[in-house]
Image 1 (spheres, protein in one colour):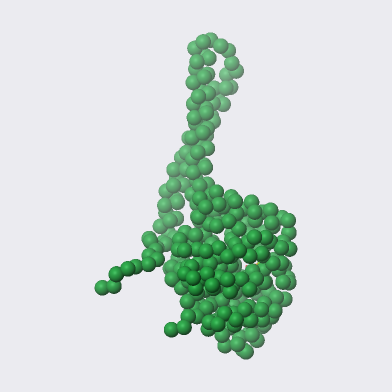
Image 2 (cartoon, rainbow, N blue to C red; image 1 turned 180 degrees about the horizontal axis):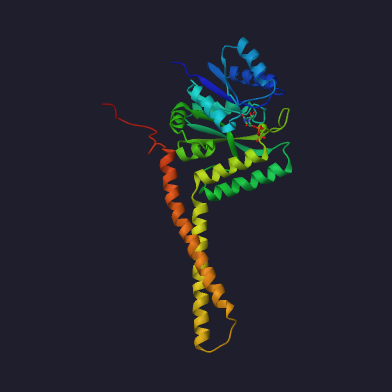
Length: 310
Ligand code: UDP
Ligand code: MG
């Protein structure tokens, strides 16, 4: 049977970009030669986005729309689109044309050549503020350190995923979602497709600083226990340091060398602080286990089977 593609586009207050964005994306999808659907998820827009989507859907039966009752956030909008997608490959793209639709063809080529995931890797960002460029650069590096390189550098959610990857995604129902991290956790054969990130076609970013910080902390907390390890390491360091300090003070006292008495209090106090850090770390380890169980992810993911049918 012929394969089908699903394009998933989250939309939040994007009336300025929607008409042009649809035209460009639809034209690119048409060129690929597969049957396709475009799924717009309206993430509780309060402008005219939904009106435009209604008009587009009325004329184009291959355009599907799901509209949220309120703003749930980009990651949940994409998840909702993935839940509805029927395609053999799913492509996730921003509506604002920052992810160039021409790159979809390259992703599809990588998929035809056997890639399970083809993810967009940003070579450059055009037209974004210096603040965004610097914070993004720094954040991706911190995330890389914290997650032990499980998430490729400078990569957003612009990507193509094969049906078998999407099926695993659908089983992962955790509430705090960081899609690119979940994708890294799943494994599979992921191929980078390099591109230059465009300027936003029109309008302003819908990722407020608050939303960005939330996403950033989801990325770190959901995919790494390194913050915990750092807490434990600090405790061990403080205890070791003040233990040596206390020994030094005892030696000095035995040799009858005089020193201020508050040094005892300082070393003793910091020693106990170190013990508290270690206690927090141990508690954190238990909480982390609970969190893992709550996420209830699949225990393992089988990518291929040979001679396994009964
Ligand atoms: N978006 C969304 N819900 C939100 C914020 C953003 O669905 O709460 C969509 C938005 O319409 C766009 C994509 O997510 O298609 C990326 O948002 P934006 O371009 O504002 O982020 P930036 O590119 O500035 O990081
Ligand atoms: Mg954007």
